[in-house]
Length: 579
Image (cartoon, rainbow, N blue to C red; front, side, top):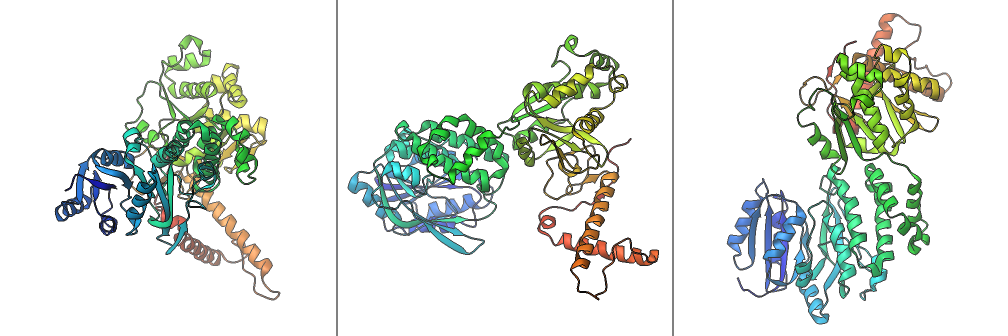
């Protein structure tokens, strides 16, 4: 392999055995000579490493392979850069392709004007939809950098650009998701001599279930990526950078990643001055809508778990950190508060070994001081819990009559939590009998907020959100669950549901069915035979037969729904908690 190379093309490789050959072949077909291809196998467990090695054997003068442990896309690119010898550096994702003339034309333009980098357009191929669209990088081949940062496209892409080698001697990717957003836009503000070939040379294959389209806890890295973009860019272009960030935030807040709204709102508040005073935002009515989120209070990204005289279940915090990787985790045992500073009823509870009662007080007290979400050790949360941070305070039902104390949350120093704490100082049956927190919560909300004890969603006085059992106690496979109680080991794919909850759902199913039938009867032409509900005056046998038929129709409809196909059915039913 010749030491002199005009361009080094770095291809990170991870679990892409179905696409890798297509990507490599597209580089081998380039019209530019004196190129090298560096395949960085990032710990793939499929046949990708063998494919890489085969290419290296077949093209020893053009292809090198580096095998390394899995660290992510950015780290793989950094590894490739360190090994590269080319005058210019390019990146290709291993499931994409490039047109044959790409690197020759970009290289010639770069050498001709001694550009720091040269960009091209991108063709996005929507695989499942069998369609494509060309995204033009800029309106003119002559780049006005301020205008490009504010109004251009493809600014966050690493792959549609050819870079001078010196850029990568001075910069590297972070170990995070959205490493492109964290680095590439800021580079454009620093290395300002930029060329542009107005042709769609890069083919970006967009498909479902990729890192960028699948929701995982680490996706919150995008907030840090935006922060890096703002803080690390050339201050000369700060207004353009903030506006560019605002446009990306608008898309993420309102359409792409709504689940992470609370995290984006915190970022908006962090740079409140920049967003409010930005002249570009002031002129853009659409993007101005993100400023409305500045008035939203969000529950802190804090998880509180109290465990007095008992250990946290094995793997508990690891599971939490998967969904809340940047969250503050508070693990509180019996030593968290000085005993002499606790109410007498709590001191007495500790002395008598009534630890569950004391745990609930500790959780309330920490919640008041810190804000966040309380999870008892029996609860298992999932990523959906993030969206509940948009409340000021929330509780939930465990069935039609009881509340749950296993998961609830609030803003710091919320007055309802303060009132609940104060109730532990009162001469009341709650404290004399060491009654559980769920009863205290239920009665307090009934008295002060007119809670209806019916197991349904309720927003009380535009302040307290109360959720139904499928959100904070049981997973009914409807996509709404945020956490659930786990007491018993059950087979994978099965759920354990309290019988009272199952009955509640059955009753509501029939209630909805009857409403549907009544609506159909209203719409039927005069003289048509009515469709009877389940309470028609017929024999018990007829009613039972029709009921079974209708239940089967509902089951068939549900099984064919998207929700059912995407989740596993509820198969195990039983009593989860004893009275």
